[in-house]
Image 1 (cartoon, rainbow, N blue to C red):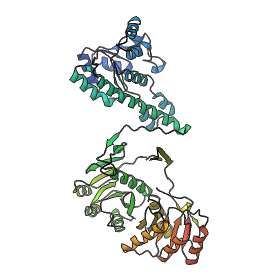
Image 2: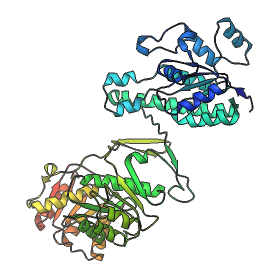
Image 3: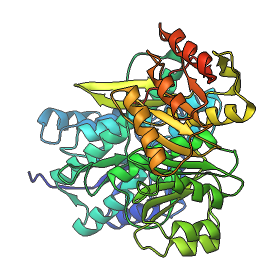
Length: 510
């Protein structure tokens, strides 16, 4: 491609003026005629730069409270005409329509207005009409017109104007047009999703403009990209760039620790999306020490997360361990200094933001979408299934185990004692295998399972699990129930003095 064009006229109508001044100044230096409206026109006049009001072109004022300013044939004709088309050129002359070579527009801040909690009417007024129309028209006619559709493109157009002295190639214009359509499609998606919160149409529309290329995906031979606003959720204080697998583990850690938000000091260590250590204590130092005791082998290279500030004593213990990421709501100055002692260790401050309430994953040639599992089993959900009722201490351990179980790969069994994760069996094809794995692991790390609690993410179809648990010293069980053979497990527990409660809620995690 070549088809170079020299910019001789520009229409500028923007909501944000940040960074606009140098562009206007450069256009003026290059002898470009500038058309504008409203606040942008005033902004340019205050720079003592000549500007032609759009009203002078259309012979119509801004009407309907500013809802209609640029929607006119003399504006859109100037943008959409084909400069190599004799008929278009003749019609511009016949109807006295000015040629427009550059359109600079940004859109009303719809998403920010929604996020601010504004009223419905205020949100509706931030649905841009003229701006989105100008963007589509200019981007469509990129063969002749340069379109700048967002503040983020201001530096790019200024650089182009400066380096090429107002001359643009078709490659330049097509590149800016592609971004313009990216801006317009994202904008429309945001508007649809706002309306769809009440209409609830069975339609999936996603638009995430923030993409960060990662070193690689799950393995070095795979490409990986993260789409999202990581900085809105975390302050990264130290360490190397996060990898694809780091991000998956951080996601698992944050979702797990949200179960313990506002509770006593709680520390978790995760590996491959599963908790390998978790404890709740009177101090975060003790919580970390006991979490690490859950599986000091798996903790190597793990993801660490705390629900409260990490202090110096805790940091000194953490510093002894090789770990990839540490997450906390805050760190003491002394703790931060210690943890920064390893240059690659990633230190994150978790901000208090609301997470999405749906989950998405690719499946076959499409996408699976579901509501997030937002049910956290509580004391009021428990139904005693056995003659022996759990004590208050057992109930606390059962609910603690249930929270961990919910965030562990199915099939899973979680063993807890005194609010400390003893072990879990994760991702097994058999629930019996999951239980045996958990018991073997707990005993290998010298845990005394006598009096411990067991959580299962789904029901027991046979009494084999409760029998194995009983013989290992486990005295209380939490499970959803729902098997046609529930009574077999209940009978065994009744015969052997094991307390069992049912929640009615399954927590599969595949």
